Image 1 (tube, rainbow, N blue to C red):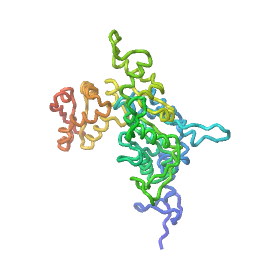
Image 2 (image 1 turned 90 degrees about the vertical axis):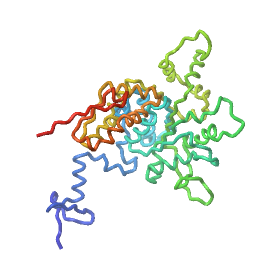
Image 3 (image 1 turned 120 degrees about the vertical axis):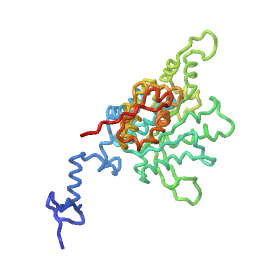
Length: 408
């Protein structure tokens, strides 16, 4: 029987240390791990499968998280800073609180207020990916109270558990993002006499999840029914981030500040000036909008996002690590085609997105419309540079095709 020996450390092959065979050479698993550590560092992907509390590097500082967000999200400096501090305090509370005294640290749940397409969902997704924790994203408009037709509020936790690959402990340290939270506001400040299936009732149902409690959920989702096995999830360590556009909140803030919305002789404000009032929002304004005080009291951290300007749109197209332009350039490069955008074309694309009032999320749709015919012919364009001009964006005319010089 041939006994193999590692070509790097001369260790003999065993069940505990299996070998990888190459061309007249062998490497043991221990040497593979050591080589990975030398190239990439010990705290990288090798630890990604470990429980979150064993990955001590997870507790990044607020500055580190802000700098990371800055690489992927253009503008919104105040929101990025607020979220970075809230996330740091949340996980510091979980992993660094010694509980040596009677002081209890409250959860730092977050409420993000900003117009459609301003980056609320992207903020939550990016921070979760950076921290390597599971995240569940839900639309509040699809939620109903238990017993009504629709999606139970507790199904959010089922989604989170699925994102954690069934690991309950990991799910209990994840993030839940609830979008369109403003759409479940009750109409006016007076409580409705009738049952409110998708409004105040859902807000009430969310309370126990957000504040922290033991929740029984079906292991495979769906409705609860008798004689069913349940999984228990403790939500006290789950970070909840809620987001919404809150259309009309500006008017409520103006009324509180003493500026009548209607009437003659009022000074006309620009749209930008009105948007700037959002940073003056207070809890009473949110109650007037239709959120119940109990829910507001559990969303301790509030951050506002500004409407994206044309200049920011252009930067979003080109600057982030995973910007849309870089993504399409990579797609074209696979077919040996260089994709180039002229500055005038980028400005016009940004203006189109603003005109459609869809925020940054509308940029991909516009680019798909512009590049569809070109991508249809892409395999036949190998060796060319495709230049997108302002005329291409405006009239969908043919782009410039420049033959690349063949290297000697």
